[in-house]
Image 1 (cartoon, helix red, strand yellow):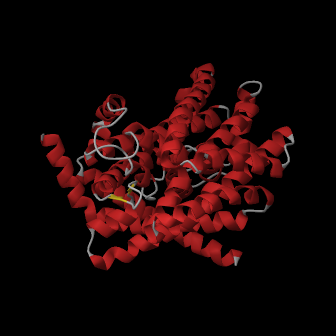
Image 2: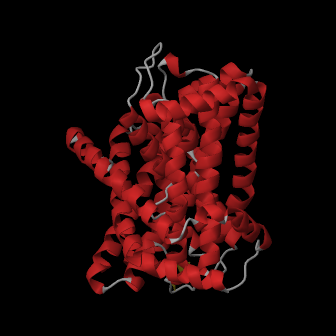
Length: 440
């Protein structure tokens, strides 16, 4: 079974999927005439000027972005970046940047479609995302894709955003402070349950408080390391770009990497971190109080900018500057080693950051899974889903999750396929709405 799922996973995240993800980003970037890069200052002004939002919806545009960031700023920013560099070399970071620049157009289009085609459920709450813009924006022949997305989305969350996260937290706390895994699981269950059972408004309020604080703290910590080694920054940036174009030679325990490995792992880990094209983030943005799809699209694209071009870059630069790749270590341990070498207690700070990032991922993704379940079964399924989400958390701390990780990773790819097809078909509508908005 493991061999079968590994084979499927290799196909699901293989060259065809990476080409589809990058190709969709290129198509949307060209169709939008690169406004997602040109209008970044405008997007930040919109975010800061419209903190409360005007129009229909459940939460403010700012809270919608923080909710989506709560799900994306996670272990991918610490462990995912380190894994990409360990497997693909420093050049993987360069391809993460390219993926992010193209992914901003993808994330923009997702949010525009999500707000335009959203619905209200039986309880009056707003639901949106790929399943709704497939249902309401495309011909009936495509509707089965919306159902497929909702099935994959509701299942994938239990793996990659629930049990895998609780397992990561329990392992790191057990290694650092000898906390029994079950204790970690039970505490997480109580904390996540207190937020999730309150619905999107409570999730958004917690995310709006926690995400800016933890992201800014982590960025400042990285900037301290970079500033302390400022003379090494130019060489590190040169090494990253050269490795992306030529590959990187073996050194110490680091096995070296080809240009293809840098491209493959940079793109795959970049998507894993910022989720552009996956179809998850627009579910949060569909709940925003706004009547302007384009404005929410502008705010949504900042999620990819902040997650990858800022937070992931910080992690990658610290790893390259501290020269820990030759150690042969991978994952969160590599990031921990880099910060430990940078200053005393660095490993403890990374441990705390991992725990916070995992917690916010769990609460953010709970809303994604819930909206997928509402699409499939209606509002009567909300409470059973929330209870199941909370109850499963301690289970993740007690079992080996290699198989769960593989299955969830594969389901993530299966989520992306219906979403990317919908974005390609709805691209002309997104271009039209964008032109009309900026003419005004």
